[in-house]
Image 1 (tube, one colour):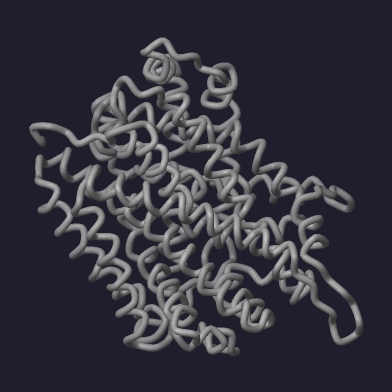
Image 2 (cartoon, rainbow, N blue to C red):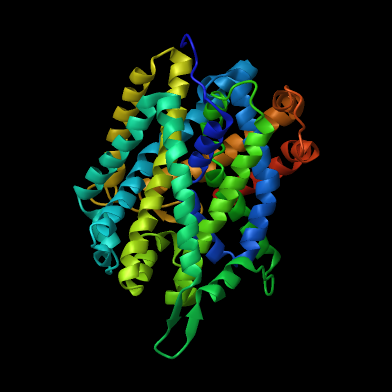
Length: 462
């Protein structure tokens, strides 16, 4: 064990680091795609309700566990109750699975960023460019290693000089870029060959205004499950990250205030991410373009930027710089969750733990990249999706282990350790717990049922 545990210097450092973790590729890539798929405003309405209840419950629980135990995820649960120490193992396995493929995707982002910065954005808009890049042998590995090196430099720097310092610089810059591109997106207008005029404001209406017309109960259930799944990404819960970051929070910090600020920051950025992307894609590609799936960021958006002419090169460069910022702050938190767990469990120095994690990530990251060429195969997942190595790792971590850990957390805190454990930690300096009744009902009753349904859906039984 380290003689003196590192900690965030102030409340704003913790909030920006936690928000930086939460605001990643999941927000900027996945949120707009789901919003477009799930009837726009309906998804957003459901997402906001769940963020204020379900997401709030999981975020509060994990940050409080971290601060109470002053341990990384690997040791924190065992500190609370020895019988539930296995949850720490699951919480550490999840970022171990995510880190290699997240760095591979981060490499894709860097590749696109370099194309736009050097004035070659039009090349990225060509048909087959994305597929050509990820199926090539050397390029994806090189860019993945560059992205991983950027992540590792921050983690080696530690909590204050690395994570907190990076977050204080990148998060305000990221927010300004998101707002700027969002405003520009709303000013767009395009006339089709058949004379149909589409505007950014029309896209905004589709994105924000809920319309339940024609929706069945099954459709609404799918939206709820999608919004729940998105929240794991959006607030970085059930992957050990918030436990790790919570363990670096000083005891006199107003935890409730910090959690509320993280919630607001993350939800605003998620909504703005959709505001950047959905209206712009609608203007140039119509409703069909909005359902482009996860390829939205790497296939559809470059085509949108290409249609903007010279402005598209500039907007494209700013967009991928912003996505790079978001991806790095998130990958830093994923790596830190593993490093902090090893440090606490084995008493290793930060340098020794980080070297081990980087070595693992390099080897496994290369395997993920090779999954699109030398190691290519197709496997049908229980939910019906056809998968390669990256997709399988994503499915195991996000569809199975994260909902499982969240369910176990609800059972553990709701019924074994009791909600009072978390409530006492959050209010120990006399702070008010504004949504206490929501927290208790969610952790004990509502969240476990919803998470069980999410797991059933993941394995194809629902």
